[in-house]
Amino acid sequence: MLGVIGGSGLYQVDDINILDEVNISTPYGEPSDRYIIAEYRGKKAVFLPRHGKGHKYPPHLINYRANIWGFRKLGVDRILSVSAVGGINPLLKPGDFVLSDQFIDFTKVRPVTFYEGVYTIYDETDGKDDLVSEYLKNNRVVHIDVTDPFCSSMRKTLSDILDEKGYRYHKKGTYIATEGPRLETSAEIKAFSILGADIVGMTLVPEIVLARELSMHFASINVVTNLAAGISGERLTSDEVIQMMKEKNDQIKEIILSFIEK
Ligand code: HPA
Image (cartoon, rainbow, N blue to C red):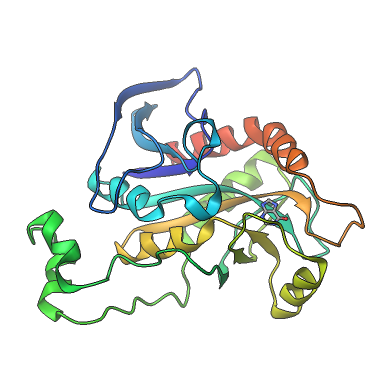
């Protein structure tokens, strides 16, 4: 089943049937909100607003482990994430979509793994889960491979959808993840550009890492809401981020519905 992480209201669409709304407790605490299980044209998907109701959790305080664990508990094996980013690469314009294919991690103080000790995962599943059994059998430190962290097949589907719709987008891009909640200095953005980053945001890490630890496929639709610090010469405001996400909301919904259908 597909899981969608994004803003609230992405499932408020005429053709979507809400089947259930579930609260899930996890060994890592509470997820950001209830999970909405919905059906669209015979296909099911689960939705979760990353920042919770009323945007109550800032990026550095989101319980990413609980969010991803909850999806897994509901049977989700593919996650489509929607996020706002600043554009670093000069080819990017506000309003563009970017299908990121790499990330660089500049976060600092977030729990980044489920694998903190032999029994942490075992307790929850009774060892019935294949993935967990494997972990237990090996009984060792786990270093997952993230050479290519994003799912190429999900990215291809997104790219086909964006081609069909005719929306301006970029087929690949390196996402640099910052700790936040402050925005970046212009010197940081210059440095990130030299490192090869195309877009900057505060939520991809550890979301993708945790999903990969639980063997889920992951893809991201990044919306360039603003040019990153120091690029336009203007100060950045949260308003421009919120405003652009509002403007792109209908297009994002269309992309997600097409994705659910495919
Ligand atoms: N920096 C970090 N995160 C962001 C930005 C930005 O410029 N825009 C939207 N999310």
